[in-house]
Length: 242
Image (cartoon, rainbow, N blue to C red; front, top):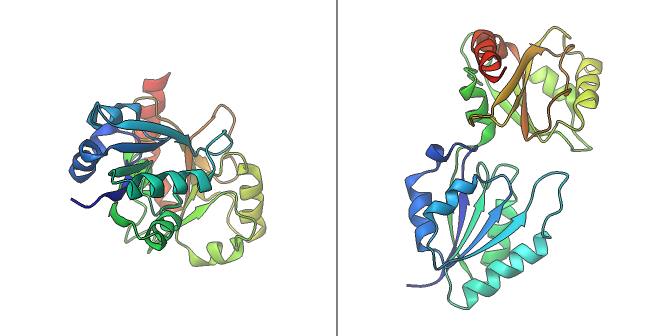
């Protein structure tokens, strides 16, 4: 069989949200490159004969360079080894999977993409928040919280649910930008840390009252009327964590 690289999404954290296709690919791989946000339990599906390389890729933490990761995948695939690149969430949602696919294909390496459940959908759902709802939101917008050129005014005008990845560090700047763009400070909003895991922690409040105090991440920020549907379940989550 021709060697290939699997770009695998490990899902939002809960091991049971890993797909069957991902499990099969991990068992097949000779080399596995793993991101920090991937559940350590995923290692149970990796062959005991496989080489596992931890490459980091977590905001604010030391990690391997993207060049090193891509070079390692290409070299191993060219040497006839099957490679698995295991990422948290989905490889094509803020995971650089698109860049890696391009680099591998340029090098003549076969690529198989195995989607994962992205945190932007799964984490709110774990708290009872539907990111779309006929009565509250006609769409959802995913955005990174550390981009310098985000058009916050356009996001406010869209009236979609906003799901912000990697925004914990810049939370106050995000709040100020949204309010300056005209968003009602009373808009329901929440911050969810370690979503889908037993250690899940959530703050359900309003845009005006949203705070990162006591949160260390990884976290997802959800802003929009749909957040109001999670208030009762969020109270239960916080009561369990107390």
